[in-house]
Length: 213
Image (cartoon, rainbow, N blue to C red):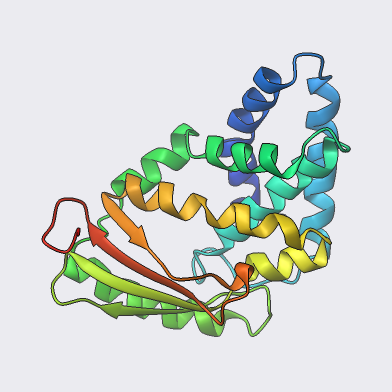
C-alpha cells in the first residue's frame, strides 16, 4: 500500500490527540522520540500492507489507517503501554477534532443516506478481495431510525495478524460504540470477528427513538 493522501490526513488528524494522551499518561516520556518512532513504524506498516483501493472507492481505508497508526504508536512505546493503556488510547482518539466533527456530520438516520451507503458498500466490497478489506452488508430497518450492518470480513483483524498483535484488535472494536454515539445512535451487537464470532453484527438505532429500548 502507498502512503496516500488518506494515510497522511489520518496522521495529521489524530496523532496530535494520541501524543497528548501519552504525554498526560507518562510524565517521564521522551515524546519527541515516540513521535519519530511512531511515524517510522506507521510508514513501514503502510508499505507492507496490501492495498484495498482508494479512499474514494473504499471509505474503510480510513479505518485501516487508524489501526495502523494505533499499532505504530503501541510498538513505539516499547513495552511501556499495556493492553489497558492501548484501549484508553483508542478511546481518547475520538476526541480528535477532525474525527469528532466527521462523525457528528454523518446523516446516519436518513433513508437516502442509508441507500447510498448500500451502493457504496458494493463498490468498496469489490475494491479488493484482500483479507485486509472489509466485506460489508447494510440492511435497512423498519424505518430510517434503525438499520443493521454485518461485517463478514474485517481488515483490522488481518492487520492484527500481520503485525502479531491479534490481542489488541478487540480494543479497537470498542471505538465503534463511541463513534456511533457521536452520530446520534446506539450500537448493540452480539459479537465481533475479533472476539471469535463469524461476523460483526451491528444493530444501530437512533437515540431516543422507539427502537432505543
